[in-house]
Structures are given as C-alpha cells and as structure tokens.
Length: 164
Image (cartoon, rainbow, N blue to C red):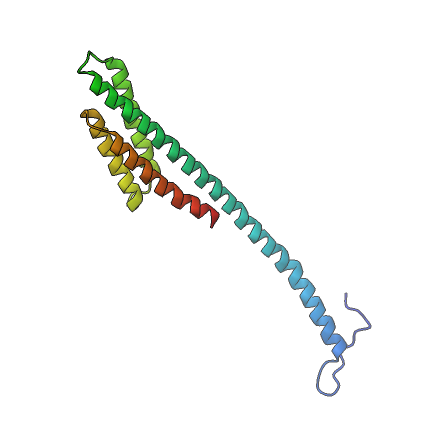
C-alpha cells in the first residue's frame, strides 16, 4: 500500500525531496532484506566447508605420520629377522607377517600421497629403498632417518597450510 501522504508532485522539473528519500529508504530496506541474508548464507557455507577441509587435512597428517612411524618400526624388525638368520633359523611365519605389514604400510602411505608431488615421490622412493635394504640385511637406520626427515618436511608444509 502506498502512503496517501506521499505525493508525486513535479514542481520545478523534478520529484520532491520527501518522495525521493522515501523511495531510497524503501529500496535500501528491500536490498538489505534480500542481500543481507544471502551474503550471510554464503559466508556460513564457506566457513563450514573450510572447517571440514581443515578436519580432513588434520586427519590426513595424523594418519600419514602414524603409518610412516609404523613402517619405520616394521622395517627395523624385518631387518633384524634377516640378520638373525645367521645365528639360527628365523620364525618364518613371523617374518612373513612382518613383510606383509611392511608392504601394506608402504601401500597406505603411497595411496595417501599425491603422485607427481616432488616431496611425496621422494618419500615413496625412500620407503621403497628401505624395504630393499631391510630384506638384504643392510644398515637400515640411515634409510629410516631419511624417511622421518622427509615425512617431517611434508607434514610441516601441510600444517603451515592449516594455519594460513
């Protein structure tokens, strides 16, 4: 309903100031009633997506770290079993289980990393070398140290992404 007190009089070649101010006020109220909630909705949706993305990235970092540490411990145990072969027959069932676990952890880490990423590819290559060294009765500690250092580089980069 239009206010009967508002007049659209054209005097001196234009609308009167009261009418113009009323139209501007009504337009502003209309725009703020539509645009305000729309903008608030868009911001809330963006924040929800961002928080979900942060949670996923945190879980990814924790999972990668856990799998690499389990891989390192398992590689050392596999290396110890191959070293023990000289002193007596190893428990072959335990040895097969350890190698199985080692390969499974290697695969889990490999799947979690982006292929084509220089840092991730370097970690996969180091882990592959550690498996070979562990099975060949070599000194594995140097490989493990390199794997841990590379994992720290990768997780540090991703943690920095969380805070920025």
